[in-house]
Structures are given as structure tokens and as C-alpha cells.
Image 1: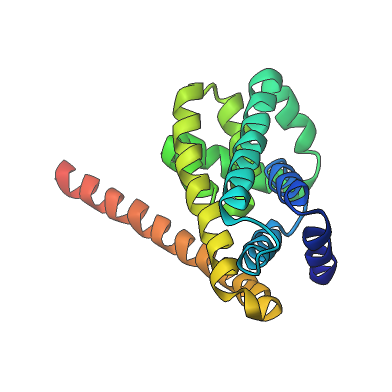
Image 2: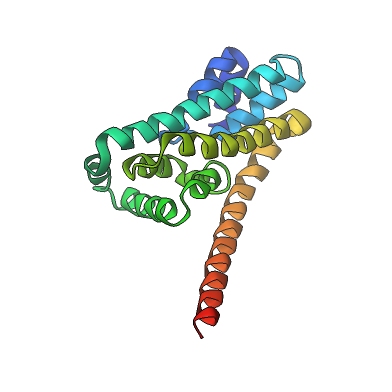
Length: 200
């Protein structure tokens, strides 16, 4: 699958980068991190232009996030209810709603890169919850800058070993998400302990 993606990026270039980034933000199961890495590698070899890859991926990711946000804004709980018919989607949506309720814009920020698997559902939940558009945009734009720049530059710097890099980063993604969950739970626990101490 990843070799096929490399071929698409090599043959079609920026349109594949844009489509992949956009659709992944709408929960279409595309290994977009591999597309970003390969686009960075092709930029290093001169087949693509680095700044064009960065701008294309960044704008497409923001457009995808805002499409999901707008779907949530228009459809509200009716859309969420329709999507929750699948148990796995229902679990993801529940986590996304909790993230938006508890963390607000910060939850949007971390869902774009640290908890990227939650990103599409956080976009939808933020729209359905009525988060102000400018607040969503600012947090989303900051997070996508980290996600796009990180993956594209990794590919640019280490693209000579692209297949190994894709495997390694795929493993890292799970490790980073697990570490992020641990840190978030630690913060929640510390806040609860501080609150309890103040009440005494």
C-alpha cells in the first residue's frame, strides 16, 4: 500500500498531497503521514518544491478540518447520532466530545497532531458544540502547522530511507498517542488533587 502511495505522489505530485490531507481530516482512512513523508522526500530529490508541498498540505488540511467543523455546525447532533450507529465510531465521537467539552480549543490543537486519530471527530464535535469559528480556526491552524511541517521535513531530511522511515514513524505515532494520553491523565489527576487540597 505504501509503495503504491509513493508511486502516486511521484507521478501526480501536489494534487495527491492535497487530496490525501483533505480527506484524512474527514475520517477517510488514508495513511496521510506516509504521503507527507514521501512528498518531503521527493522535494529533497528535486522532484517537488518544498515550500509548495508545505503550503499545499497545510491549506488542504485546514480546509478538511473546517469542512468537518461545518458539517458538525450544520448537522449538529443529528449527524453525530447517524454516525454513532457504528460502535467504533461512537467510541471515537464520545472521546472527541469529551475533549471539546473539557479542553475546548486546546483539544482541537492537540487533535491535529498529537491525537491525530481523533482529529476528524473533534472537528465534527467542535462544530456541533457551537465553538466560535475564529477560536476553532486559530487552534486548528496552529496544530496543523506542527503536523504538516513535522512530517514533510522528516521526509525531506531522511527521505533516502523512505520505506524504513514510514515504518518507524508509523510505530512512533502509536507511541506518541499513548504518551499523550498518559500526560493528559496525569494533568487531570494533578488538577483534581490540587482542587481537593484547596477545599480542605
